[in-house]
Image (cartoon, rainbow, N blue to C red; front, side):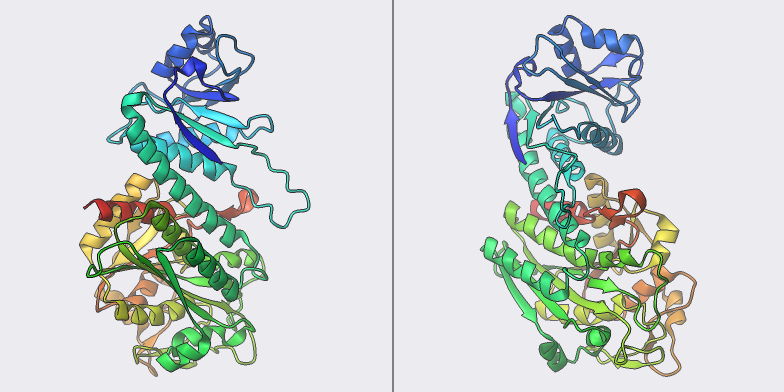
Length: 495
């Protein structure tokens, strides 16, 4: 999609449709009032007779208007006539984008830049327009014979007066980088497990490195991991014919002596549960168990596009978890890279086996902070649903920074406790630690397991099991938490 900032008068904007806001109680936004004056009062007349109430997310498409360069105007409800919250603005944008998924809409002009927002500026406004229109326009057609998509949108124009054009352009650049990072994440996640293997993800990382000179890529093969003593990570791939990979993406945008931010993404390309086999219904969605790894790729791509003045390391441990005669068995004992031994009580708790060795591997980069993200526990979905991702960590300042970034990005987190008392659930009679802690507090005990391997640095864990993909009729990857992570990096770059 092509993007433009345009300062021409609204009535002269050339597009298939202009989007303007209306409020409850039949009140027009400033942009809607301008268009109303050029259309002989048609917009006010339609609103006054109650065709649209102005509730948040309500839309009405007006056709065959005269007096404008565009023949269509989309009215979108913004709620009460007061500064709009970030969440309500996103809801309005999503509704607008969905309503414009028409075959004849190829270009859209957003006149929502002038909408007053709660504690948010024009830069954020424009960024959200780009992100949300791209999110709605995305459709996976790679393996469909008919590749016709609902959305034909090719051009997005952001209307902004000249005095706001600079801030709008910055927002557009950020929005474009985030949107493209989200799109990459969604594409990789939506691919089937027979295509998107650990080797495939490694190849995508290599391709990304060729595209951006600021990224260097290193792939550890199983023989390399054996030499490092990664017995926990390697145990997961024993039931698969696909070799495991540990992918390192090194972004060098900061000074030579500045410590890196390390992002670790679980890259399990398919999870059948191993010997502890999952039930058949919904197992197809276990191709999404690599969403953490895909999000790391999407985030590093965005960082490279934005040329952030930071050093960032992306680590993606990638494998499959399948049943086989050589697969992990309940009761097996593994030796991790850290030297800690692990009793495997449930082979379906494999993500932490990948992550723990990767956390130990991260020590060699002398990180400032380490953030891991993983579709780790179904318990997180039960506890929090699909609205926020779960957050746990050993550093309050880091967790606070991530929560703040999530609130800005409309990609929210909810922090859960990581109290020492929960560690008792991981006691093993036969090894240093068990890989599961029973049915209680599953999200917390999973993080407690990881905390044993993160004691040498500031660390946060994002459980994205409820937010990385949608299920049901709208099944598909969401691209979360790429917006959150990029916002965190932007905040760090500006601090």
